[in-house]
Image (cartoon, rainbow, N blue to C red; front, side):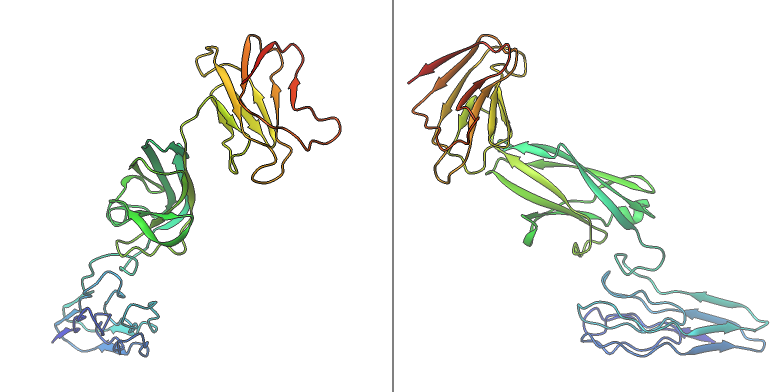
Length: 307
């Protein structure tokens, strides 16, 4: 006896038929559960499940239940029974499948995605993406992808090649970020090349402007730090030193009441010496009692130039 399930056509009939499996009606309509295969007596049997055409379609097999076709969610019926009491030779083989989210076997799950660094400059740079989860192996990692969305909305702007398999819980890939505007990207992993990123964890990649020694009190979204200064809420604290501890002149511009009223103000860091600050047509008003437009903390020594 030879029994072979029918293959998927890859279009309306989404699932390859199994031996005794329920049929697939296509068009997003799930079929019934699988049937029953029983082999008795002294029979030599070869049973082969049908083949799936697309990785997004359910995996066929021996006695497999049917699944719905089209491009919707796979809702397959229950698997049928496969019983063998034959004294003969029985060879039962599940159908082939190109892999992906609905391939046979245990599928990977994601628990997190981390970025290093989490911020790149508008001039571009590299980001290492680390994906963590369970049941990773070289085969299913080869189908994984990482997609970038602008502010976690709309269609993916970019989809990566496959990451590198590290171990059963980790995969990584290094992405090159081209020069671009200041913005935030949301990165998501997918466990199949079809790119279903809807339920995966997210990480935010910030593309920030290169740091400067200028504080703009009118910037609606000021950075948290620049060259020779840092920001904590409305307070810009001037250190007067760059990353190499070299003295720099910090220039302040803008109006803390434009384009929206705020209590932005300046301070010179405690014990900072030889600090040079240039106030270029700056306006700082609307402060609360006890707040200073330019506070010198203990031990601070600053030279302020008005232009």
